[in-house]
Length: 124
Image 1 (cartoon, rainbow, N blue to C red):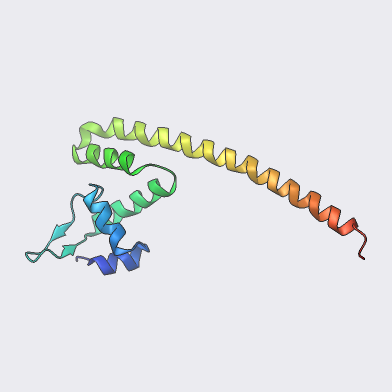
Image 2: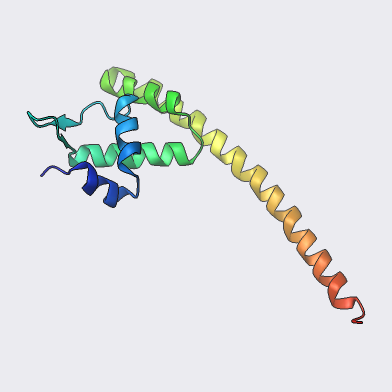
């Protein structure tokens, strides 16, 4: 079964322009079209979109994602390189999480500090 752009937009919460952009940028190289040019996305395309969104939402650039897709198109001989890319990305995400955790702790500390201050402040 194929999915139209509007169906995929609804399923993925991406707008149609974003889907077209991803295709134009080479992130979805296997989207099929009818003779009249209407896009029909497959289950495999939806899986790719899930990975693309995951990678993008965790800070991977469009260029890096395109490089990953290009390697994937070359087949199993690039498995090691793709794994290395994902391992490096995972390290980057973990570092970002650690930095964000540090920021969150500081914000939490400030909330506690200011809450204590305003609770002790005499009401006029």
